[in-house]
Length: 249
Ligand code: 1GP
Image (cartoon, rainbow, N blue to C red):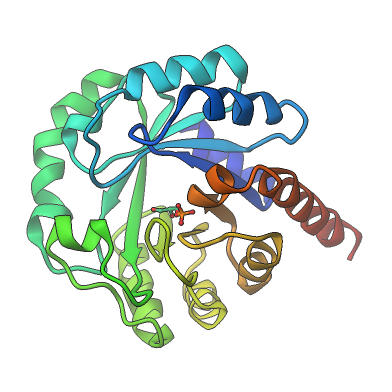
């Protein structure tokens, strides 16, 4: 349990870059990884709810050649388990009511996970409606949480925490037009003590700052850094300054 324990002990805000194995074009990928030498990323997430090119192993090997940053799998199903990562978000899709994504896939994955040696990060995964249907909603056959119902999100997270989940991930979905609202992040922050991950549609330093201020602990950015190379330094600065301001306060 080193990644989760060390992260909790640090008490820091952090940011992660999500690398979708299907979208990793070699040049852009190498450029991004090279930039992380100057603008360190706290974690790399690798995965997505649907992948067509099962290149997790190669993606992780490339990351290892450039950085010592911990790599965490963000799987869509047990086929995405790759032992060369450091850890895996064991996602329980608590915003939905599909038993397959609450326990079914986990039963299939459990022996593989045990053998893999990966650190298991039990995570309450909450998909939030951002106006368009996301891949994860379609693939999982679940409805997302309503965008403007922070109380529903808070009760969902609270139930997840009571069930023993150790992280909560509020996700507006890859490429979401708008990120999870600050009202919802704040409501979940008030409801639970576990670290809160927020992702989907974070395309600027300002949006990242607003999410952190509302109570997010870890920001996840995928499309944003792929499309705008300047976002990486902005995010690194926002997170660093946020942490410094907390220390000074
Ligand atoms: C999606 O939270 C992640 O599951 C990241 O989303 O690609 O929109 O940053 P973006």
